[in-house]
Image (cartoon, rainbow, N blue to C red; front, top):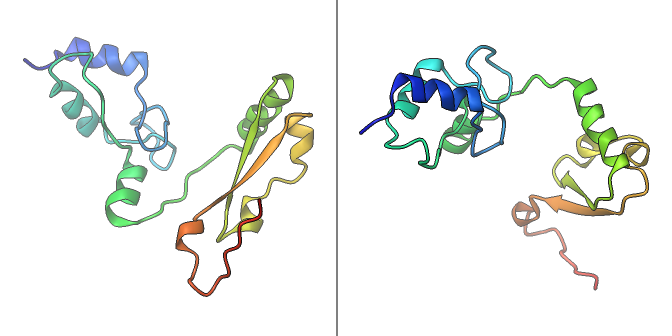
Length: 141
């Protein structure tokens, strides 16, 4: 048994997300997080046996990254990003600050403390595992 068109529409209205980036799927704005061709999206959803089946689907950007190592730029509204960051200052939280070790400068957020308030920060370096062997790797404890 596969899903009916009404069930597919209901799933889309409820909002399903990409298992790669977590963006809500949409089929209207290519280049925006969560984009997937509407025909592909509906075809996948209609092939499910139940509305309770896990949805293991990637948006176009995540699919290309996973299968072709192709990174596509994503249009991102900086005002929206600042609102998300600012909302953290009103909450008690531990902030994990993820830094790309191959682009430390591009990973930095100027004035981070004004966005996150007095919340503690843990700095996490990403891509440590692919640093060249010539880089000395010391652990401080």
